Length: 203
Image (cartoon, rainbow, N blue to C red; front, side, top):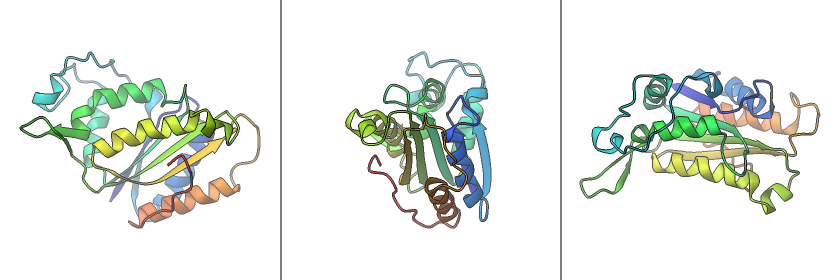
């Protein structure tokens, strides 16, 4: 069983990366874990040609978006992490998602969407510099989670849990924090095929 982790943060030592590392540590006890730093990828932006819908693949020249698309297809579970940028996912992660529409979903003969990953488990991770409660009232972390969940649900994934850290701009110990312990627990449950608890109202 393979768990694919997509780190959509430009900060390799930031809160999102740290939460993903804890999830990876938990999941690796039972699963093979593959890690992708999305900001290290070389990808052209989507051109909106819509040719991927009938053809089933992006027609742009082969690049990292195609490679990661194949990894998503082959993975048994998916973990997506992103910082909150203007109540949404990070720009580079959005490019990756836009380029892989046919990886996540196809369509019926009548044009209705059809998820290609029916029943696969997924987790969503985000961090937001806005303090807790205000990040929810302003729709910041909630917006980022909603954007990622929309794509996962369209693909047929079952979002098992969302992990959110608000007020991430404050410098504080993380490795043994309550959030780190939750991340490890969620990762372990994912690795064993269980149902992780939902740990955020934003989920």
